[in-house]
Length: 110
Image (cartoon, rainbow, N blue to C red; front, side, top):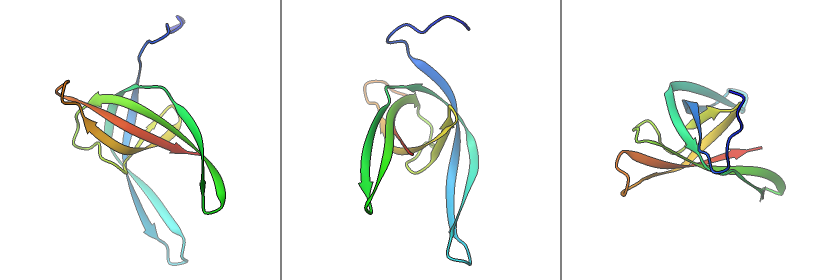
């Protein structure tokens, strides 16, 4: 598709959904595994970037919202992978005025 998106056009992406499991290694490190749970179609909102200082060092945090169909697998702390990046689900809000739809708050640390 070579046509440009008009302003205000919704961008829909297919995201992989993963459950993040963390375990401590025998050497005191942290091993992270990603268990695939399926896929979800997302309608993305605008991205925002801000700087956050934690433990004396600055980190860039990118946030966005996404609209999707209600799915019980979409829960906070799970990870969505789309566009080559991993996004953590921070909050899931079921929309009362639009049955069957949910709004996700997503966060990506860089």
